[in-house]
Image (cartoon, rainbow, N blue to C red; front, side, top):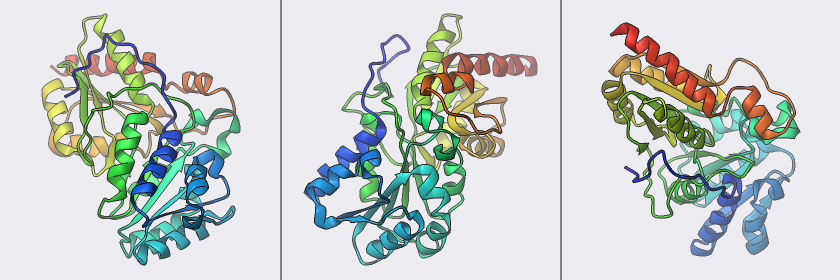
Length: 326
């Protein structure tokens, strides 16, 4: 467990897409077997760092994500550690059939896909480029591991772990700079959630940029005498079932917060575990059955209910249900 409490200042760090790009270069220096495929947006996904230093291992596939996935699957099948990257809405939505047939079905072990510009925090580019269905699609692919880092520290650690993971991996990254949640010494393990803040009244399970909002929500709740546990479920697949069961049993109420459609994201997966292991009242903070619009990232997060005050209110609602049940 982290030694952090709710009483600390979240300092702004780099975006997870930048942390991904920088880490990929570091890994490329260490392992000549790593190759990268790009869909003509490397300056946005930050794979241009890798292209500049290792042009012979960088393949520009044009604006053709489906073809790019197929090329990378072939490289990975030949023994390379293949990374592909594009906006999450492009590489997952357009490349889904190839991810299914060329990667998931044959279980290509060395295939890694990174979707950047995920969620509505992409901002002004608008709904056509906002990846809000990606987690549901990738989690539907058998054998895929799905990772959602919350800050630059988590991104660096999870990219390193993903590189040598046994099986295909999807990493979800974002466009805006995000607060630094973790100390550089924090240890990560695929499939193991991290409890950042202890609490016995309610558990907030969050991913991505929503983790910082969950921490802020916990502080708001603490001012009211409500002790909220905050858990980073950075691995969306496979879930840490034990952490979820423990949270349900020990706090009796759970809120899930994600920058994704609530109908098909992390919350649905957590709810399945809760139903099987230890049923308790739940609330879900996320995108509610709609596409967003173009706007400034923070304004969009506030409009669509993805900030600390919304998480805190969800916690109050679930606690009322918990107390009524008691």
